[in-house]
Length: 142
Length: 245
Image 1: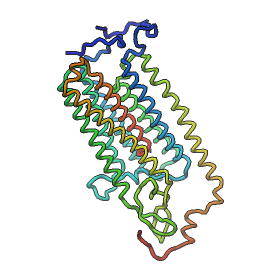
Image 2 (image 1 turned 180 degrees about the horizontal axis):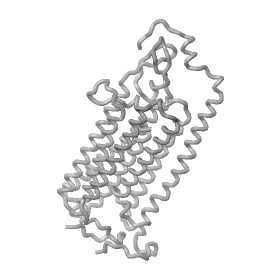
Image 3 (image 1 turned 180 degrees about the vertical axis):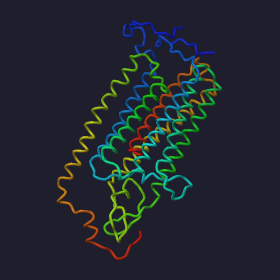
Image 4 (image 1 turned 90 degrees about the horizontal axis):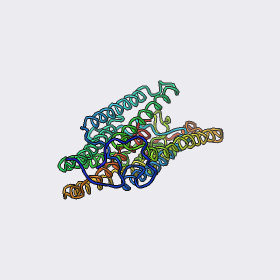
């Protein structure tokens, strides 16, 4: 038995007669992507301090791209957005393009703050020096 | 009854039908989720901005390395991976419940809704353990030349840069924003999971009472499903921003 109701808002009923094989396929895809992300995460952890900034940054970028792929599969298949008409897809996806500007603008703002902080480095005491100047004989707990 | 194939050249905007080909309720659920995506996006981008603006940030592999009943074993990423898989799996059971709803199979919907609810509760339990571990765990921190023992809270961050003190490496206080962002964003997400579990319980009861069979469709379950998948979607990004990078 399939659902049979009249809704004047729905002109064409999407086909839901298929089996569950697609759902399970996407489950394995999501699991595989997560395992690759974890592998890259462990790579960064185990090689910590032995990698150039460029490699660390590109690995993190790769993890972010894998995350976007996971997001695509969840929205497209699990939320069935991929089965909807183009009008609905566009009204949801197009506003999200704002995130491109949002991320670039704010992260570069944060980076600029860091650069400004570091330009007055001479006016701040170095943490290492601060510690060496005030040695304590007894460690006090709590 | 409508057909399944959409003929090309359908005039969606000529009136008399929804140009989005879905019910009003579903369009509004999508718009709500889009606005919620902007809320979470704003939180995560704000966190990123602050993290970019300081020279040192807590190393997630160092902070999140514990596992229940594993004592002090160093297991970075392990517990949060478990949480991620719990949420992915509960997303799968949710989409299977929606699938059974399309087939008007009440028993199937009941079974998968119950599994989804259990998955949600399991995730919340994991988060409760993780928060408790972070807040109550104490870590030696050098504060004004004295060693103190701090947990991770919204006002204390024991994960700052390490310095040499009496020949030993010891952490100094880190940026105070760490706890606020971590507990704020995972808490906001956890609250979404909590309300999702409540919504799913309501759907489960309504299914059991036969409300959707009387109505002739399981669209309510589909809308609850959209919310639940969104919660999983947000976790994918929280996982990225707090634990992986």
